Image (cartoon, rainbow, N blue to C red; front, top):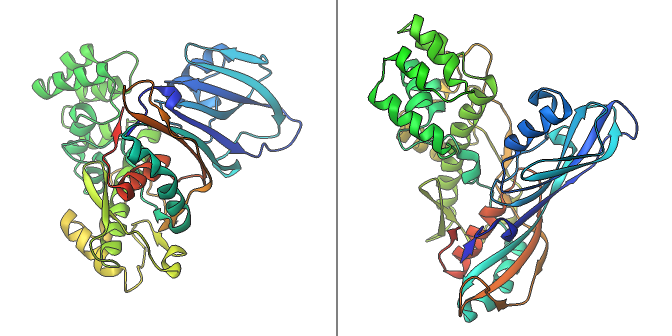
Length: 388
């Protein structure tokens, strides 16, 4: 099975309730192709003559996709704004900027490619089984753009290892890096400490330059340098590691609920996917790790095992070396199921001769991952899944 072979293979549309009918905020319906939400935001902003921070998207969407999402801006802008990979149409006015709480869900249409004909015929019953029984509510790879083979920068922050955190920021290869950033990080790894030289080599514009400018004058001032990283990025780094630990806790807990579960892979780790669990478990929530959380007795062994592996305790889940960024608290459902499933007919795959394709459609609540549904579908069908 292959997904995201081209952007048109993966279509997602936000379902949203726009607040109010009149007001100073313009609401745009944005259609983007093969571009990240933040890249689109940065291109829309100068066209509207505002700063990027004034263009508010309540959620991020996959880059390799056709995505329809909504943005707000306090501006009497034009009815239509066009860019290289997007078009935005003004659809309403309202009294405030859009918020994540305005989202009601996401509707997906995904073309699954590269099946044998017999495999393709099994997509429909397997999708129905996922709808009936559900799957673990893990965070998927999109949450972990800051993951590096060298480690999580969020973990270094929590462990108060300021120099290591700065090194990971400047030199650690991350999943979400652009080609230009990857090349710069290679340079940093071979010229660590040569701050003046690296400052002249840093991409323009980039937050790297603020950090390097400070280090040029304060070569060992790693804690203050770390706090010069944009707060939004620092928050993303912390939440990514917190989410990764949450995944491992849920995985350990679920592994103890069933024998020989199927598995899926998220950022290099295998996580169990039981075919069925109790209805009681499907209604349970699991708190995100933080300084004050108290886990129930049946979950505690999984928590202790994961933290021991990470050489951490819950006392470490506070960003003590940051001035303005904190770990969020809250809980997340252990289980979810796709809704309103529609499976198309088996058809010849136009991209792979002699192979077959099937389109699946479904709706998810905010914060749930369509790619996780597809990985779990592949696990149920006992076929490998490849992205692109």
